Image (cartoon, rainbow, N blue to C red; front, top):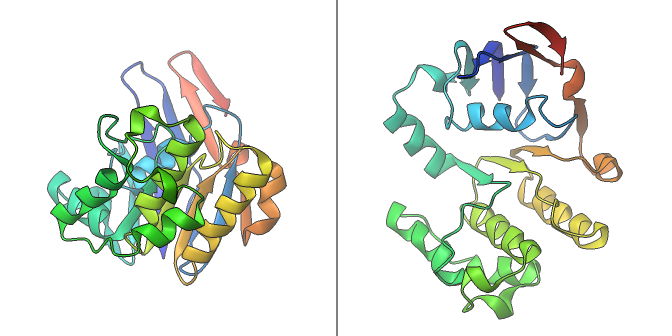
Length: 218
């Protein structure tokens, strides 16, 4: 169970995003919709412990990740969260297999890597350097790296953004299968994919964006 309470994020330019209190149940999958800039990606980064809120709490099975040290948050994320980043965060000069095998340094079992790469249609690319892949292929490497950890929580930031609908739907179906019994939060702009999820949340109505000049709904 993920619960966020009175969450407020402030940025260096003076703008801020405040969130309605939300709960995400274990075993359920959520699609997060909303206009660009409404706080969807920021929310994922807060849950992952990548960002620290100005105020509020995020409880993961009762543990307040916001109150923990950065070292503790990083350790928790490595072991318990599979994060599919919008900008991939892959090592461009390393091979696909190396980008997954690097998880072994954190004592993570990656024995299912080939099966995941095959399911995602990129097993034949495992020896290719990431810089030689297309955007869609990089996206699928990022997904495989997140899923191989068999994490308790999956956070996906536009996992189909570089894929056509047919391939994107297959990727989402793989995510949903991997998320059985776990919590999946998936940011998407493709409303056609929303019926695949247990719940769809419109972040336009659940987050409020404000600048120094005044407040507006995001």
